[in-house]
Length: 254
Image (cartoon, rainbow, N blue to C red; front, side, top):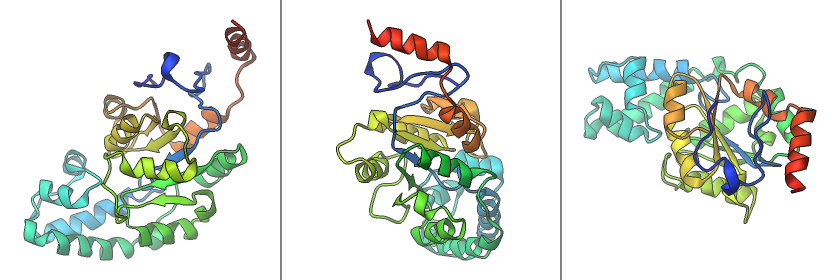
């Protein structure tokens, strides 16, 4: 884990690093990415892309996906070599193929209880995802987490795609009208997720996966990097050690 810009020193709001734990904004609004962060959808996404791109004679594998990835799927397909005239048809075909795999999708183990623990601790939560709303809404309800993530900004909403800050700013405005984004957290698995959080001023929590190794997430502005959402939530909600609490009290009394 590393400290990111805007998340340490006098400019941060209510942040403290705890020994063995996580930076903790008090009662923060927490916004998550969906695919690859909370839900194990990337294998299905890759399979659908392989099928679509094979039709256009475009080579595709995990390395090419990572190199070309952007939440703006039209731009990603152009980067990969899909002709401009075929991009919309390619996107429609991808949705058909991905929809056919939904019955085998599931959240990462422990995600539901982790979100419930955050809600029980008083945190307001939402989503900013590049996924299509009708797909994400179906999955949220199927996985039983819809009520825990009531604010949702999706890829087909009339907002700029990540890493533009607009989607995260809109989500935070709904979660905490008038709140300071420096007291918020965004959790995602892609470098563009961290760039968006950094631009807004929120603490970016990077989750290592297909789209981002630890070094990639840190370089993009992650304040912390973890192996999973469940691992991060456990550290984030862990009680502050007494020694750290004493130090915090002593510092506040100065």
